[in-house]
Each structure stands twice: as structure tokens, then as C-alpha cells.
Image (tube, rainbow, N blue to C red; front, side):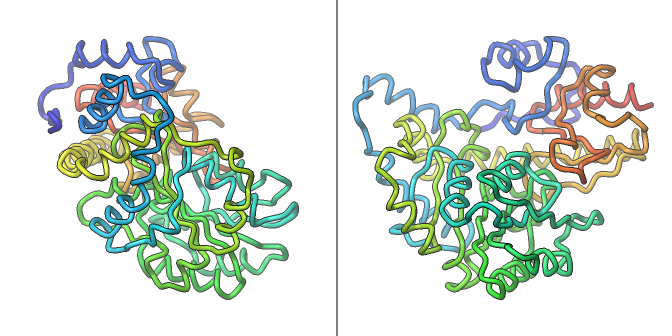
Length: 391
């Protein structure tokens, strides 16, 4: 179980935690100088789920490095059961395919369905790789900004975007990154209605579906109806919830016949294959990881609430809508006049490494994204540094 540090345990950073984190070779703790505290890319500072670690360790101990599809073959059925148990939707295992990561599946779905010049609707601000995927291969991004007040879907903007000539697909992050919105059934229904009216493919990245805070619910888009599922590609992974992104394993429910058939028609090795460590870790997460996940979400919610309380008390000009899902805080710091790139200013002058709002599209100007999936002492030190600079 997770040995979570509570916010009231003091604000001195644990030397043990920092020593472990700075020993990692992953990008989060190696992008900046050693005096910078990173809170940018969506990796947790908490150790990965023990069940996933043990699954990989067992693979190593057995020396089981030959051609191995044992775990990967189980994932379609296991993922289907996981979705049903946690989210009330049972995807057809026969339509579930294993991918190397979610963005691989996003790219191949759009590539097989769209042609150069076609438009892809994206709800901005949004996860930066979406901006690149929407425009790759000569496609056009059709911007559909979320409402700033609560980051809700704007049905009128969506209707206008879908009516643009050449609109061909909707690329959705549900829950949403960077805002942390867990879209309601009503909002998703509006997306489904527009998609049906204009015959649009929906690619729904639901990688954050298992990091939802108490009081909110994840609704799989394809769960709305069989007709919606039939025009949707639903993508997910254990990587965010169980902190195993580097193992590269994802799953996709190919509800859209055209995309499914196009992917099946590709030469056999074009998409590669997931490695056995990633498949074993994902299988363990989906079959044994719920108790750890429950404890972890409790810790993440505590960190979210602690961040919100300190901002309200010490930096009331920072506008912050607490995320319903994810461990990402989308902070409007525009009142502090930090220049064009607020994250760079805070990096240079506060020595904290945040994600720049500019990376999330033009509507990210004046924002930074802060990853609060860390220990309470480290989060407090990050907040202290920001408060000192902005005060």
C-alpha cells in the first residue's frame, strides 16, 4: 500500500525522496539543473505500483526474454473486464488491440481514416501531441476552445467546427489534459450527436480514466450507445494510473469498422509489438492493482486539495479550477505579468520546472501546468518557491 505523506507533516523535503528521484534516468528529473524541482511531464514521483514492479521482476528472474505473447494475449479480455468493473462499460474483447502507446494508436487511427486536407476537431487547450497529430500528414486542425469558466464543452463552437468543410474526425481527451475535466454524459452526448450528424470518426484518448477524484465520474464515450461505439476508437493504458509509462503498453477498442479494417490490413510489422515487460506490468495492474490505486488516488486528492488551499490563501490571484481527474493543475498566472512564457520565468527565477501553457496551444497563454503527483514535502517546496517569486 502507498505510504502517503500528509500535508501537515512538515515542509522539509525528504533527502531520501530526492536522492531516489535524482537517481532516475527518466526525463522528468533530468531535463533541468539539479537545483530545479520538476513538476512538468505527467510522471508521478511516487514509486510504480508494486504489483507491476513484481511482475517485471519475475520476468527478469525467470530470464524470460524470448518471444513472449503470454501477457499481451490476455489484455483484451482483461481490459474489457477492468472497464466494466470500474466504468460500467464492457468493450468487445474481439475489437480490442494492444498498441505500443496511446499516441501510436491516435496517429494510426487518424492516418487510416483521413486524407491530406481533412480537418480534425480538437478541444483546446490540449495535450501538445494532439496538436501535432491533428496536423500530421497534411491534415488541418479545427480549433474548438473549451469555455474558460469551468472548462466545459461549448456546443455552439462544436457545431460550428463540425460544419467546417472537410471536417472528418474529432480528437478527444476524456478526461481532459491539461484542465482535468471529467466530461459529463451530457457533454459527451453533444459530441456524439455532432459526430453522427456529420459522420465523423471520434478518437477518444481515455488514458486518465482511472485517475478520477472523489465526487467525479469517468464516462467512457463509447458507453453512451452502440451507435456511438461504432464510430469511436477508445484508447487507454495503465501508464498514468500505475506510473509505468516507460514500459510502453496501451490498449484500443476499435469500434469504428473502417479504422479496424484498415489497421488489420497493414503489413504485420508496421506497428511493431508491445514488449513483454510492458504487457506483464499492465496485466498485473488491471488484475491486482486496484487496492494500490485506491490508496494512490487518496494521496493525489490530498495533494490537489493542499495545493488549492495554499494557492487560495497565499496567491489568490492565481485562478485554479481543481481538476476532477488527472494529477495536473492548470494554473492561470496571467495576473502576475510573467512575460510571454510564464513557465520559463518561473524556471529562471523560482527554480521550478513546470509545463508552459504555450505548449497547449494559443489558448494556453498566461497558464502553466503543475504536476502534483509527488510527496507533500516536495509539493510544499515547489509552492514555496512559486509564492516567493509571485509575492
